[in-house]
Image 1 (cartoon, helix red, strand yellow):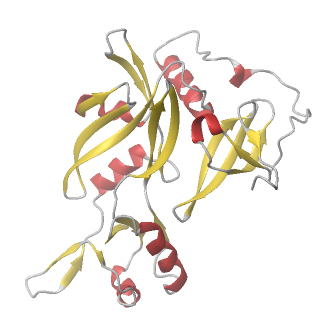
Image 2: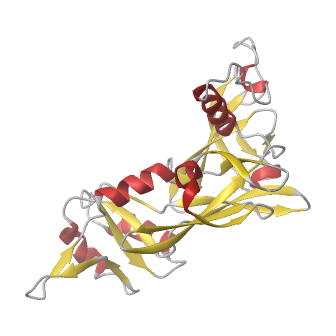
Image 3: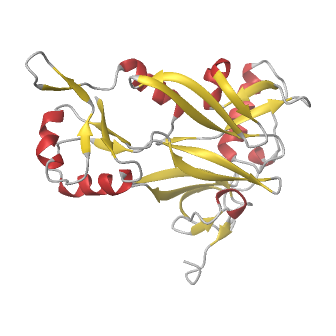
Length: 269
């Protein structure tokens, strides 16, 4: 079951690393800090920055939260597991509800809520959405298309929360996973022509060496700025690179087009 560990905003990463180091093995199965892709637009160019979705919160998968208490007592900073007290004043730890866990699972993949593609009219009205925002389109309370942001208000984890969604539009840099979702979406609507920006289905002999291999370090500065990714796998036929990066104490996976990335030399690292 998931439980929420609360700490000071900004201390999540350090606390996660500390817990992973000092907690007794087997006390919890996993811990993660949910992130979302914030879109920064400057000079009509969009760039993605990873932000904490719930500042001050760490989610921990464990069956017996009481076993984590001795570890938390060793941490001097403010840290507590969200819960309540029974009639006798004894602390009761309440797991994340099935509804809240289901809500979070609709948003994140591999610990990250990715951007959502929005199709808009000339009058800046949304006519279609692909991505995590699609389920919550009718709950948008503030829409800032120029800033590539939508804000949704939902009741989650015991209180009303404002969830920020990063937005992507036609003409922004290509993202392989988003191209695939858009194709699936069009096919689901009965479209006979699901091709979007072409290169994802380019037929290429898989024995061709495209110059990028597992273990290489790459960047995609146009979208992800100075973040450095480590290549895990290369799909030569699709010319897609599956890369990993360490972020807030966890390894996150990202799909990139091979034609868009730049190899990082040892000197640049």
